[in-house]
Image 1 (cartoon, one colour):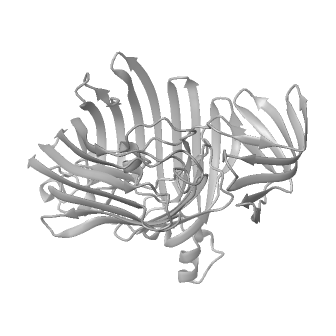
Image 2 (cartoon, helix red, strand yellow; image 1 turned 45 degrees about the horizontal axis):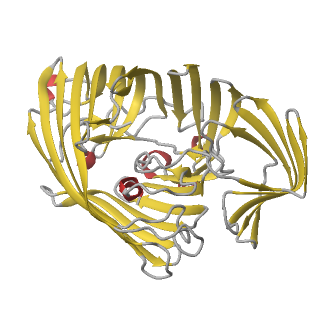
Amino acid sequence: SDRLLAAQPVEVLPGGTGFVGTIGASRGNNPSGATGTLSRLRFEAEEVNFYPRGWQGTGVRITNDPFGPELELRADSATLTRLSPLQDELVLDNPRLVFDDGFALPLLRRRYRIDRRERDPALVQFGFDRRERGGFYIFRDFEVLSRQGFRLTLTPQYYIQRGFDRRNLLSLREFGLITKVEANFTPRTALTAVASFTNLDPETFDPDGNPFDDDDGDLRASIRLAQDIPTRLGIHTLTGEYSYRDRLFNGSLGFRTVHQTAGLIFTSPNIPLGTSGFNFSYQASANWVEANTDRLDLLDPIRDSNRVSMGRFQTSAALNKGIFLWRGEALPATPTEGLRFSPTPVVPFVQVFFGVRGIGSFYTRSNPELGLTGAVGIQGQFGHFSKKFFDYSAFRISYAGTLRDGESPFLFDRIADRSILGLSFTQQIYGPLRVGIDTAINLEEGEAFSTDYTLEYSRRSYGLILRFNPQRELGSFTLRISDFNWQGSPEPFTPVDGGVRRD
């Protein structure tokens, strides 16, 4: 439903954006772009005293709901202090979340840092990653250091299911840690460095693991320096990066680990071509790569691994367009009609879309791989998600066919799925409950290589989404709080689409 929200015809709506925090491993970044803005907040208190650097209140109620609040943050007293132009500190006495003016959920934390940057509000988070973390695990973000233009975050992880399977719940092998450093040197220059440790036992820690097993290894790391470049066509981005054991998902070839890579990537924005409705984008990269290959002519007869290293140069360009065949009218933005179960009124529509993408990958020790992909599809949604039964149905059907010349020596970027059928369907069952399925099928093999199953509980001011993908052995639990700028989307892998990495 995220893609359908993005394609929905534009309406003038109250509020309209919000927070989407993903807990666990999600299929990809949120495509709708309808998150990350604090646009609506209602504050009530029995008494408030204002000071030069903040305020203090009693009987405090804070909500993002413009009507009778479905979700409220309540506290006996609250004190807000300005720490910097971008940060405030909020201290609460007896804080709790109150749902529908009834059920109250006590909050364990009293002290909160309110930031104009993206935030992750969860106290304890849950994830599922069968391949690297043994299944179900819990984790928590701790902001160790935060200054204007700099942030250091530590995320301890506890692999509960793996500990039960090994019958050793307290072993350091069942604990992990993610370290993330973010620094903004200028408004257009940003550095991000991430290191992920999946074993904290110093006696058994092995950063590389078995060289013949992509999933074996206790360390993944990357450092990226991004520079935004304003042009007449929009803001382009030049990124210099180094990554160690980067985890990629390449369709029916599954997960692949790039042992090392270093280089530059130049990415364009989506560029509207006049009033034609077409959008154009392109990307170019040059890097050195060390990764697994199945090409025996590139491997030594006696070897320690199946890795080879070489230079890699890639260019890609895409042209896309969507055409509305029909669009309905949204219901009025009232709590009993258009905003009953949705943060924005649903606009029924039917749209066809099509696009073409060309890819060229060139290697210093191998012949190039060239690809031309054409895609066509139809998507739409019906109903207004306002009645109790079956008042929302959404669908998406797409087909992508690829012509390929040559073959990449690597497995992580090889174009393997040359005929793909995509099917997606979401249906309201009762009230705020919706179920959905989103699958991609390799028609040449007749098998689905990625299927997401979702169960969603959607309200006007908040929502919960449970998602599971059996092929990728990943799951996520997503919390949406409308009209807040908190964010949380830990991504343990990067998708590869048609041979092009999608960050």
